[in-house]
Amino acid sequence: MTTGLAGGASRDRLGVWCGWVLIAVCAATPLFAWLAPKGFAALVALGGLLTLPAIRIEDDDRPGLIVLFAALIWAAVSTIWSPFHPSRPDNNTILKLAAQLPLYWSLISGARRADPRLQRLALAVLAWGLTAFAVILIAETITGGALYQHLRNVAYAPMRQDIAEAKLGHATFVMTALLPLVVLGGPRRLRPGMGLVMVVGAGSAALAFGSDAPVIALVVAPLVALAVWRWPSVAPKLIAVAAAALWLGAPAVVWAVRHFTDYAALQRAVPQSYAMRLGYWSHAIDWIRLHPLRGWGLDASRMFAPGIDLHPHNGSLQVWLELGGVGAIAAAAFWAVTLLRLSRPRGDLAVAAAAACAAVYLVFGFINFGIWQDWWVALGALIVVLAGLHQPSTSPRLSE
Image (cartoon, rainbow, N blue to C red; front, top):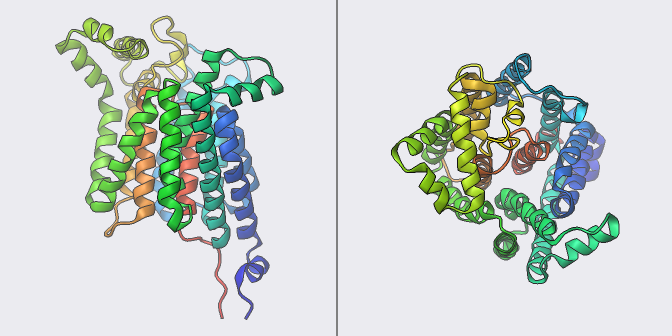
């Protein structure tokens, strides 16, 4: 009987379609990472729209999706008492989250459904693309971002040097968040070389352009991957407990540091960016204490200037501040359920890489970005998509 991709196309057109959509998303990812990281929301949403026919919820998915749906309902209810009132659709967080959940899940389902050969091709395309991007980052490091500035000047308008450097530093977050799963998708013999190029590219650019967190990520990721590979049953469970504890206990940690140390001296001792974060965190726990259960409402962080500039730069504190203890419990439950699913009786490279990416995402979320930022949510979904591409396809198989 006819077998292979051609035969599969006649039996499973949807799997082939999903595969090509994923290839296109993977091919575009390095360009978005370099030139327009904030465009990831549009890229992932478009991929989800194109793969909507593949959307499925499997038995193992239900606990995490139930938590996400319940959290979405609570966030919508919290807009009733939130002091922030969106003036247009592009700053209406609850509308965007309501659209992102099904669209992003659709692309995750599409990654699982994609034809196996196209799954592998998509991963290879991304591995080669991010390797090339890493080489570009090395060149940008040497030239002080000259290529990026030239492209921006030609396409848009002149950009100040410090802003260009900040944009390139931003790109290193994308590279390091995806790196473990991307390297694993490259040709087996070339993975060590590709990984080395990516590490050098991301690390050198992060150091040159003032992004501390990606440098931390390059240390955290291999340690987590090694732990999950070496102790595949226990390590994911420990990481799940640690993640849940961080989501629930962040206000207590900040309170303890402020109460038992000289907080002002600590702020003076650290770099300015971290001193500002310490200030945001201190203000956040004071306001959390006033509404510890319900929070101040979705996007309320925007209204606490000058004590907090847009958000506390800590995902846990932002959830506590806006959605209260109810939201924090939901966040802890989601991460616990997600990470517990990685527990295996035997070591698995794909699982170890997924755990490493999850750990990096958590590190960034706890010290850098607003939790509802569109590109940031999309990047998290893209990590899950890559993990899905490493799973056996759910496309129907041909029988003899």
